[in-house]
Length: 261
Image (cartoon, rainbow, N blue to C red; front, side, top):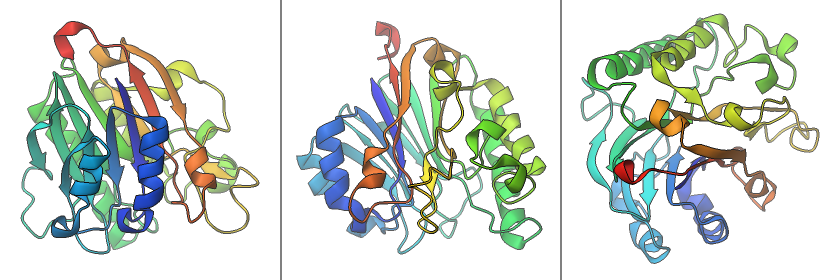
């Protein structure tokens, strides 16, 4: 099973290039973030024609998450425990075969000390508590998405300059470490330990050409799936397309035993 995670930064805007990428890359499961489309306008038909069943939680102009799958999607839940109808659409979870797929769009946080940063830290705490209360590290579970946190120095083009800023502060690192320590493995780092591998580049300052990026899009797997992960990579081609998202897809391949397919 090839699983991809991609912040598309508006599915409505990016739909033609997304469909082209789905045809060429052919992932089995795709988790999309920042879809920016309310549920009534979600392009389910176009994605069905492309071979994908869909589950989604959206709102107009902001946020939004979706799961696409070639296999049937079941047991869909939206949001975190305690969310009401007005909550930002940042989490969707589903069962695909024997795997729990959890797709997250973590708040950016804007600036350290701001109200939006406090919201980000609270959201991360709620996600960690949800995992601790309702899931088991021994179950086949993948948590992927745009975390808006670069885990380590090798995940940022200029770590000394960025240290202490949003997406690269001690508090955010501690919040991400709590989730990792619950029982996840960062799949890319199973196969690619080197620095300079990024999934997001600012549109400005020729950041892509200079490879001045950040790795903030992650695919995290519990032990049963980490043991089955035979490859993990970043597909930079969509970021070089015309009118691209500022993110590019990250992927992981799982050679699944029969019991969890």
